[in-house]
Image (cartoon, rainbow, N blue to C red; front, top):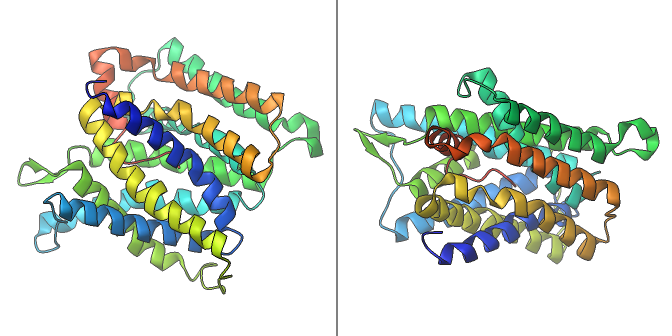
Length: 320
């Protein structure tokens, strides 16, 4: 690390994003998946916008054609990187443990490579990266154990969580291709400003999803509401700001180290707080998934690979 304080930021970020799956699980006791997603997005937007303004920045307006084009690009990114995955994680966690959700979320870099190949941002797939993809997804198979039938974990909830991770992958590829270095009149916008704009756009889009399962009465139980508040303020707003700072100081490749810490945090919290099961099969599968993720990122060791990794890892979270 160029700045030693970023070690602390990275640990705090891993704790916040790893705990997000616990917050979602608890929040679902009082709110629907759509309501949980909307609440975290709206609260995150408020925090990020406030931090942006306090830092001397401001959100871009809608006056010019260039500004409106930028907002449209950001809105597409918000759909795939925020609204869709967070609703899907909520749907998944109705039946899937929070710890397992965190492990499935760790497959995001694998999906990013896969969609990068389809979209053209990844021009080749060296043997080590191909092995990483195969190993990572085989780790998921080990965890789910579909050959065990009713004893396995494969179900609609798991598929929703995997779809959420895949949505992140699409979002990262799109951001790397269309939004990386976004700016106006040749001047790039500060990453925190882009993050605030993305969460603001996501709030408007999430509002449109409320008629689909988001208008049900809310149970005013204090603990679930506090969990959702923590998810929005800390797990979204503060966490995004921390990620932006680490990326700015150390680069996206270093910031992505959080990928390897989050699953352990989510599994341990689910076990300690919610008494979720954590057996040898999940441990083995998690290790295989993370090893696959590491191999799939081996191109980041070359200068050219670092540039591609930076494009695929924008200053926007993607992990929870």
